[in-house]
Each structure stands twice: as C-alpha cells, then as structure tokens.
Image 1: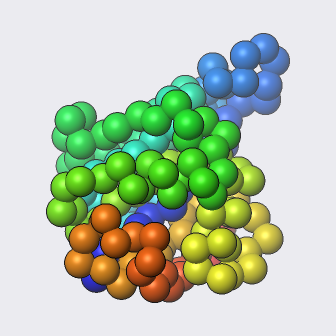
Image 2: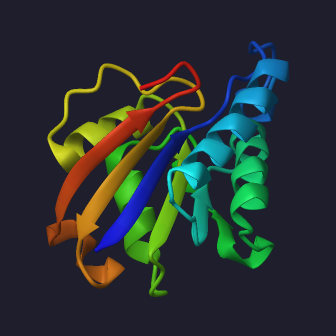
Length: 161
C-alpha cells in the first residue's frame, strides 16, 4: 500500500504580471506551515515531493520538506505540473522509480481537484489553497499506479475538513 498526498499550493498574492512568479502571501506562509505539521501529526511522513516549478508551489514545498525532513535531492520539479491536470499529474507519478511509501504532489487548481476526483471517483468541488487530499494506493510499486485501486482517505485544509 502506498500513500499519495495531493497538495494545492498555499494562498498566493494576486496576479499582476507573470503568473508563475506569484509568491505566497502572509496567510499562505502560515497555512503551508500549519498543513505540513498537521499532516505529520496525523502520522503521515512524506518521502518524496513532486512539484510544479512556479514560485508559489516551490515556496509551499519548502514547508512540507522542512517539516517532513525531505532532502532537496528528493524534491523534483516538473514543468508539466505548472497548471497541469489529471494527465500531467499521472505522468509525473508514473516517472517515479524509487520504492517510496509516501509521495506528495504539489500543484494548482483545477488540476489537483480534477486529479483527485478522477483517480478516486470522488466529487470534491474544489481543493482550497493549502488543502490536501490523502489517497491510499493499493499497490506495492509505483509502476502499478495506473491500474491500482485508489481510495480517498481524507480531505483537509487550514479551515478544517
């Protein structure tokens, strides 16, 4: 059994210019730190992070990496995760060769919500900023991801489930 943590980036400043350069606002920093710790407090330990290369996702990833002691070599940035949807998130997961127990993918809406709904048959309206979806993947190896049964265990956000 594997665990997949889907994370929507934390609250970012309003867009005035290049979207990928938007940084977290003060609330975003607070919420990312809170959710990274809350995930750990629930007994989850992230082993590897796949992340969009936007500034707001990279800043969000820093909090999860620090709290979960994920080394920089275990954080991979995928251009296709920038505003990526179900296909791009699935392709990133399929890239994983290591036998890690828990993978976190940090991305953007609507992609993270669409992926969670498509993978688990759920009907989430929208994963909020700093929101996380915890998915159990019934497989022994990430290469079996596409055919594995995926179960949504929990949705959590800074405002609660």
